[in-house]
Amino acid sequence: MVETAALPEGTKRHDPEVVKNFLATALIRAGVKPGDADLVSDVLVGADLRGVRSHGAARLSYFIVRLEKGTLNLNPKMDIKMNTKTTGLLDAEDGIGIIAANKAMQRSLEIAEEYGTGFIGVANSSHFGFAGYWSDLAMKRGFIGISMSNSGGRTTPTYARESMLGTNPMSVAIPGGESTDFLLDMATSTVAVGKIETALREGREITDGWVSPTGDTPDLDDNGVLTYGAPLLPLGGSGMETGGHKGYGLNLMVELLCGAITGTPFADRIKGARGTERPAMGHLMGAIRLDGFRDPKEIQDEMNATYDILRNAKKEPDQDRVYIHGEPEAIAIEENMRLGIPITPAVNEQLEKIAEKYGINSVLE
Image (cartoon, rainbow, N blue to C red; front, side, top):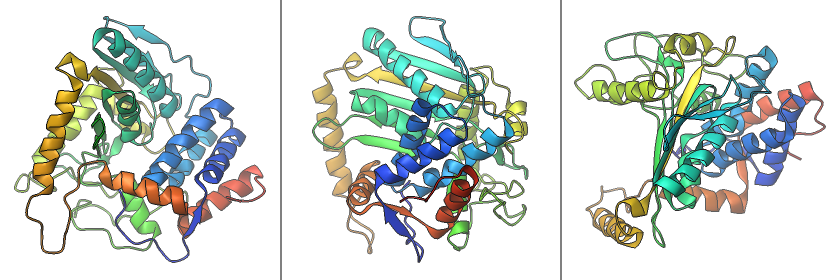
């Protein structure tokens, strides 16, 4: 989701290609193959372009920490085993999740082209960027795209007070033809970890309902990563009165679809959350052909008719527009392509440290 808070004082905007080149250079210096570094940096810049700065350049430290600790495998085979004509499993062998997710989605698209649907589970993986990148990739090819990932040690189950599950994001994208695409990209916790990290970096108060009131006060470690003693709450918040059990159910659904189904143990995921052991994440990537249901034009016409009804709803007193999922991000992309990607002072400080460590002459210049 696009960050709605005002950019902090001292924020500077940079050409997206300059940011991408810097990120790729840092990753290559840390041992990542050039082609893989290019894809990872493209995903990170893609998040910043969409206004989701919690998952953009700020995420570089996630990879650097794990590369330095040796918990990411830089030379995995990433073989895919097809168990039916339409479903298979990719073993990421503890490699970079973005690389694994790309291979899985590309294979899903190939299968869907031939059989109508294609789903690839990913086992033994790591952070795959933001979920919407992968569903959008399928949507741009004219398919319904589905992507989701588990993680660990971040979100508390309903009635618990311990960080166990991940934020477990999921995304669904439906091509809108000549009109508006639908692109849902959401965490199944009340908020993504990166949103809290962004708020703390920018000196903002943490919104009530984001973290458990019985946990520690949220704080950042030396790498700018949220500490683990402040459990995030599932969608709906604490308890059942406001629907927290529903968010917990969605969160657990993603956990099972990406963990139990792929054969990546939840216990390993909890142990790997802090970066000292293998991440042990799983993903599920899928593509579905629109014409497997009916004529795509008819589907898209009905989508647009639905949008028209929603957009004409009575508005809240201080609002003049009802948005369709994906529209705020499209607006942000246009602005950030024109003005440059905003890099806040706190993120720039992180990047400066990485640049100094790897002997990169200047940051974002």
